[in-house]
Amino acid sequence: MPDRRRELMDAALKVVADRGMKGLTHRAVDAAAQLPQGTTSNYYRNRANLVEAVLDRLLELDAALLQDQGPAGPPGNIEELADQLASLVLALAVQHAGLTRARLALSLDRPDSVTAGHFRLVGGLEQALTALGVADAPARARDVADYGDGVLLHLLTVRRAEQPDAAAIAAAVRRLLAP
Image 1: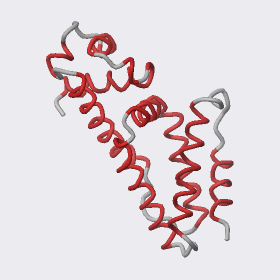
Image 2 (image 1 turned 30 degrees about the vertical axis):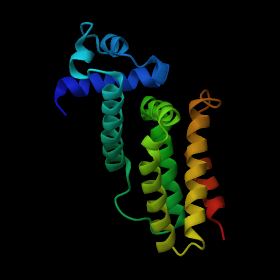
Image 3 (image 1 turned 90 degrees about the vertical axis):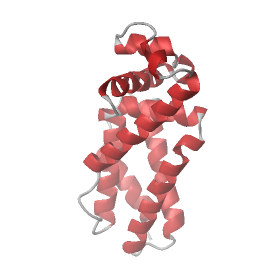
């Protein structure tokens, strides 16, 4: 993605994170990017083009985030998996909170936009759980993904004043996966 388009899409994601999808306008992106009015509309002629570009940038950033935050290899046991998932949740809730808020806002407005990513996550969890010999891996993978989504939502909303606790998150994942 060329630099100007990347700059606009990063500003657009900030707008979505701060104001939700209703706040995503060409003018709001121009202002967030500190560029002259009309710049965003020169690149993205209508709102549909703008939203599609925002979704593409989100997918690009998610892929980079998983590359950076992802484990070096498959977990050797449930404890490692739980620790990896807790680290990912904390990264999404703290270092990448704005991106997570934007993802949540986009998912409410365009649920289909996050479906593929969700199923990739659940599929990866299912593979890891199967490799670890966890019974009923598909259902357990869904449970863990649902828990992670809920924790993220709470850390960004009702528990935003609390210091997130990786050990507590990992312990909850281990409880979900206990025989």
